[in-house]
Length: 145
Length: 145
Image (cartoon, rainbow over all chains, first blue to last red; front, side, top):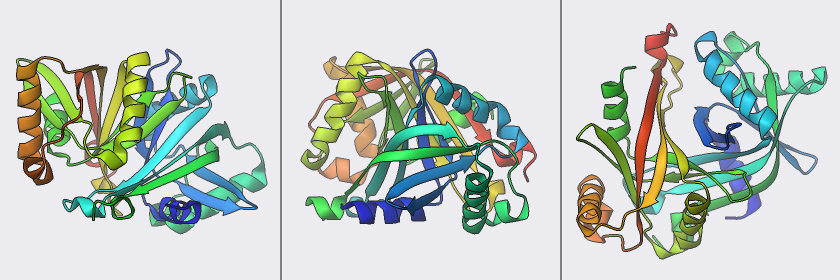
């Protein structure tokens, strides 16, 4: 799968999984909603700490990122017909967004993608992942169809 | 979400995401198919290296597990109605299955869950994750509904 197709599938996915590394070196993975922006030849994935019930778990991700900024994100399609399977993975470094203008663009992208965010904008820290590698796999392109 | 409900949802999920840690300490996450067996108060998740097109990527997971046996697995349901969201995460230590009887039970469980495996049993190494912690979250149980 070429980069453009991988970025297209990543951008269109409603949910992904984000893997981080805990300070003790063990892996942590949790689903998340995100907006991917591919601008100026730089692919960035934004997500935001949102609702209170998830706050303690979201904070674990922030703790992890401060200790180990390298993260990996994955989106996939599952189907009982395995010729329909595909996935896209993106890895890079995560950082908290501090620039006001960048934060506003990230929130706008999240609100445009997710109606619940348009109704109730998330108020927590915004995280950006500067993607340095994106790869994709599809069964149909690999001889399984 | 109590343990029984978390195990029920994990067991029923057709696809999960497995996070491992590369030898260099960065996280790795990829979708996978699996069978979860909850026996004798021990929860184990089995998966198998299967088709050749994915072999190089599957092997990355084996390389990671040999360096860092701690892994985490996650399954989730996404829906545009965010009151329907839930996820289950399971963490533990991964090991290659070497006992013939355990390997046969794992393959039988995989074949029972996935028809493509019943038709074409996977022939690669079988990995067991001895789960030491399983947690779940559902929006409906957390005041979002």
